[in-house]
Image (cartoon, rainbow, N blue to C red):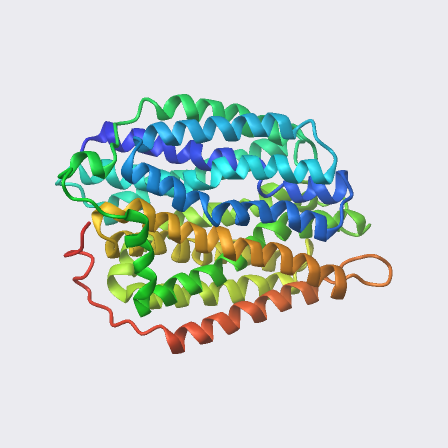
Length: 420
């Protein structure tokens, strides 16, 4: 395939996650430390990602499948997100903050699925392209973009200020303009026989009637909640050591966002390993490995500290790469190889709806309520050991249920002979 095409898709992937990485990990510091909101209020802010993902990815996938070029829709949505980010930097009221973040997420969340759809459509236009091998190499630069944004936010001193939203807004405008230069990705209804009429959304939903796919989407939802937990509380956990005199001056605490970026650095390695694991072991084993990695990550954080327990923090960050990638990227590839061509954008939207939608809502609201009611100590501090252990128990239960219920016989040749 053309190196220039791969490079252009790589740039899209980099900016896609740079926009998100500028604030996703650090907004917890801003809300809890600078604005001094409760965990319930903070959880409500994070739930906007879940609520918007309930319908926007699927709806925008339908629009891209039937009416509007995917790259144009992608550009429009990123421009909307950028405008909301600029507005967000001026808001301090929790109710208004919620609605502005919600507006931003209505625009941003569908771009996660659309970026995958654009990449898949462009790659598959080249018959010689091996998407299973090429896509992870493109997607890995999204993780690099996320890391770069985290580092810039931390090094500029913005991790607890509104400056993080300016970074997100400026990069969002750049991506909106750049998206218009991408190869055209017309709706399938325009490139296929116009006499063939179908309800694409209905066809995509029919995937849920298949027992295996229904279970896959159900467990995607549960793992989406686990991902939300680590995004919400990871940097908050490390920054909390600033209040402990023995740890307050450690570089690990001052540059907590950079330390947490080890998680994303780990992603870059595990993304590249996905083709090997997926082809050799199959989707069920890869998902089980992901679930075990979540158990291990949460369990390590339960007993970690920035001094003699620093190795646990670092190891938990390394494990995160496996936990996230083996679930998110391989799940996207699984949906792509299962859905029919005309409903792939819609199917990717459903996948995002279950993970970043319903799963994110569960992770946001339930964790906020549980922490406020059960893990705040008498002196007002948080019982982080109890918090992380409860998260580990949650991931462990998911792993056992998935192993028992999801029936899938791995065929090493399945991906080679798939739609890809």
